[in-house]
Amino acid sequence: MKRTNHPLLRLILVLSAAIILMPVAVLLLWSVTGRWPWPNLLPESYTLRTVQELLFGSANLPALLWSSISLSAIVALLSTATGLLTARATELYSFRGKALVHLGSILPLLVPGTVFAMGIQITLIRMGLSDTVAGVVLVHLICAAPYSITILTDVTRALGSRYEEQAAVLGAAPLRAFWEVSFPALLPGILSSFSMAFIISYSQYFTTLMVGGGRVKTISLVLVPYIQSGDRALSSIYSAAFVGSALLVFLIFEAFIRRCTKGRA
Image (cartoon, rainbow, N blue to C red):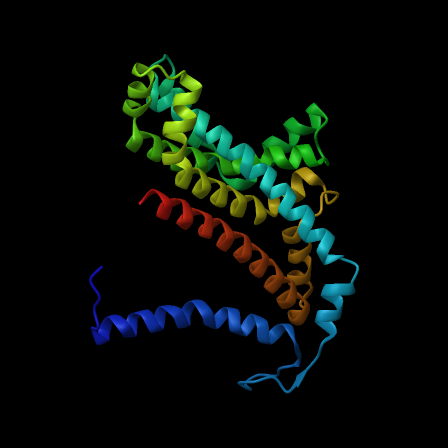
């Protein structure tokens, strides 16, 4: 890979890093701030009240993180499976209504979130899934699936079916041909789809509130009231926990993707 030492490029990279990291630094500083009057550049006093609230408060952060991560992981798994099946059906087979299936797969992206949440809430109430974990998983799946379908459709289109066809000529059964030939090539895309669906589910607030009715607790559901309360220190510490946990999961998935890609190189 060709490297460049152009000063302008270095300046752009430094400014980009500063733009990204500065809000995070301010967030971490606010999370331990006792008093920070305007226009002081630094706080006048610091406190560990927020750390105590985060670790030992009523929100029960460990249980909250576990429930949020578990719910989002289930959604990501279902979303990736849906995306893979839909991608293979639309890219490798011809059937009537293919265009309708494609439209339906991206329709949740075209409908405003408020309209979508109201409509799905009424439907789930009639199905008896309102205020339940299953209902929240379903609505998160509807939000995340279009992204998984888009990612895996592109990967499946690039791979095609020629390798599976060659494996079939050599006597491999369809399932074995997919598992041993196509699946390793699709794995980076599958992990990317899983990562994207996880982050989308993890950050859902409005749909979780509408469908879960406040009974299904996630970290985003607990975070927003702290932001609305005006307590900047508490809202900052919970925001830092939210960003940190999401970033940690994302980095783990990214490491898996890099490892799989490196193994294929």
